[in-house]
Length: 254
Image (cartoon, rainbow, N blue to C red; front, side, top):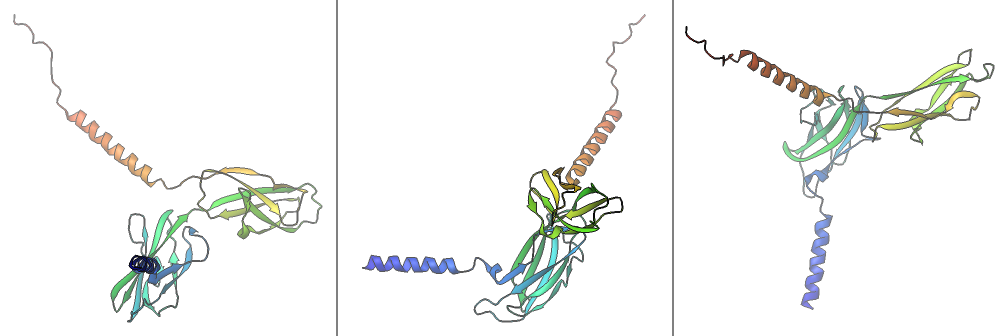
């Protein structure tokens, strides 16, 4: 009986441990509607919330910043960057997405009566848009197709935010473009443009195009090339300044 009671107590203790939030960060939270991939030099709204843990009291304040992958703080990247909160109520922060592509973090520190109690992070990526363009031509220029809607499809998946209304010129030609904000895996992809109501008489629709994406951040390549260049200059200067030794045989005396 004692063994059974001890086993039950152990199970209850384990369950209680599993229900305890992992770390103090559980009290602070950052949320955002949508993905975590954004176009460079734009702005995004985030919501932060701090909720009192059992037994906590005091004035809730916060400070927010955006850092790059090296931990460098980006200037003027969050507005407001500090302020006060009410427990359980959200506050909107506007983040200015950096102009340089890369991975960044929104870091928010929470304090009670000026003493830090929690920290939360939100990782996001700043990317250059991938511009997808298709030229369109109506087989019959007299068709009444002044305006019609299309969607872009990437790798066979419809992009719900890609709806465009197209206007063809008098000769039946036109084009449509879409800025795809994404950080896709792999480098080879396909896309197509499809009309909402179908328009089989227009050349360019439903055609599958192949395109390639790549990482446009050449920082490490530039740094490596610069280091190699400096090393070559040092090596060249060392060779040039090295004294020339004459190992020839001395002339014979007469």
